[in-house]
Length: 210
Image (cartoon, rainbow, N blue to C red):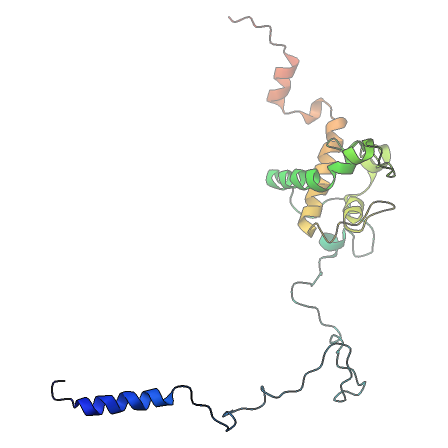
């Protein structure tokens, strides 16, 4: 470096400084112009490229968008292949599944149907002018198919709105499971209680130790 000419260094710096801020009247170099100047159309505009002169193209017949294939009729619609309601929930009902149903029920259903499913939610008892919600403990609703309850959650019925846009498929079935638990809780008998717990209930605690 000690032999490097100061004059050359100064010239190099001046050259670099002279390049800053320079503008060119020449057009920029574009190796591929296709994406820079491609014609585009907004939805519902006319496009002469197609025979129907429409820029908005219909879906290809027989295709389904990824994630929207609903091949399992029982799971997605609560119905059999023949169109009747399924009698039972088409997924395994576990404790975690039931607890999920309780959580979702408390969020979406209790305002009208109440925590016990008796139709005495805060909206129904607050004199807000709503059509009274039915109790789940009627003979009719205890006898309907699980698929019917699922469809009511998804699509609504009479004055009840549809919750299909808010509650995913699995959560709808979880709510159905919890509704069945609520119904059973109001009509339980001794056979519904585990033997060890039933024994404690049947044998009063007198407080006497031996």
